[in-house]
Image (cartoon, rainbow, N blue to C red; front, side, top):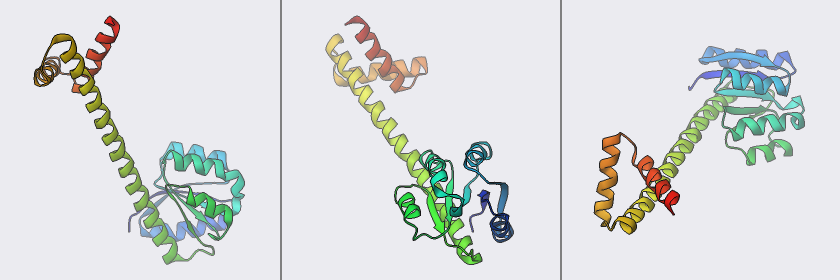
Length: 193
């Protein structure tokens, strides 16, 4: 089991109590209960839970914006408690990164499995997003280094290897990243030209 911190959003205290009775003995930590969407978003931003469990009976139309914000910003995993055959829930889940559903009435094994999978998948998507950002940054850095090398070759008559070595030396001497050196070179030639 994964465990993690969670928030319950429900107008019905019975749902919150049932969720707590199922998840807490299995290593999950209850943080807060709320009854409206504004409070939910504030709590998510304040407590940084791993998971929120949202009663779909809370008027999904009002929740849609909050759930989309939490999902788009990848703030935590979301489990909608309700009928997954509901078209509104299905549509929301199809477009999401980290929204799951668990049918009511809540059954212990199914809710535990859904919570474990939701947290695990959320962390996986978060890690993939981080890798993608890193790959994009690396690619952008390489592009900038190539542009700077081309400028040095053109303006100073250096070979590609000499231009690269000049940038590398400056990087080491001034304790700057190659990207920063490339940006400085590009900026200096743009300022001249």
